Amino acid sequence: MGQRHRTYLIFPAFLLCAVLVCGLLYNPVHAQSQPPQSDKLMMDNPEKDMPLEVTAQHVLEWHRNTQQYIAKGDATIKQGRMTISADVITADYRDGETSSIDIYRLTASGNVNVLSDGNRAEGDKLVYDVDKGVAVLTGDDLKLVSPDQIVTANESFEYWALAGRLNAIGNAKVVRTNDTIEAERMSAVFKENKDSGKRELEKMEATGNVKITTETEVLKGRKASYTSASNI
Image (cartoon, rainbow, N blue to C red):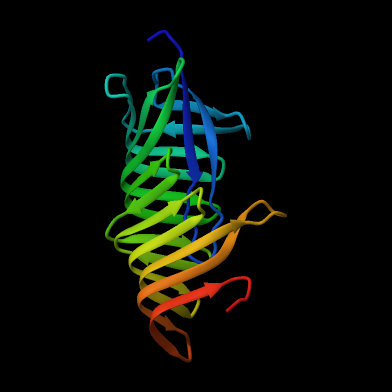
């Protein structure tokens, strides 16, 4: 127990912000992995000097045999403007090549909420695969709420960090002011703006029983596509 290890976490500032507008960022996090001595485990991000804090109302556990950190009871992860809360948050790790520990999966389950920059995502379970850079939020009543729109689905929200792709699956619906888009599945692809460094919507597709409703018209079809460069 006396030996100090290093833990590497990768958390997305994960809000899957919306199918139309998304500012998802993710940062590598460097963590000192001493066994928790209280109800808080402090970790630091050396790249942006933004502290990451894990708290739990009940207990923080370090399972060395199964190689897991588990936060139970109103568990919360905070880093900068991003907060993930859930009943239980589990970090799975593996031994590194030297004395370091690599966290390869982060799982939040039960009443999952993700907050970032005034946006909120809700679901039953969040799994982030660090190796693949894939985050999946599942549940029967998924919701993404941003200042100007609400996205819902009843199967999953998926985000591929490296590819910049976001999917809303299962009776997906976007409500924006007086307009709505409904489909079995929606997919958005983002690209990095060289000037701002942020990812912006490049194109969007809705497939399966597509329905677009405005104040004056209703459009139905099998597939809808949108390209931001042409605004068509």
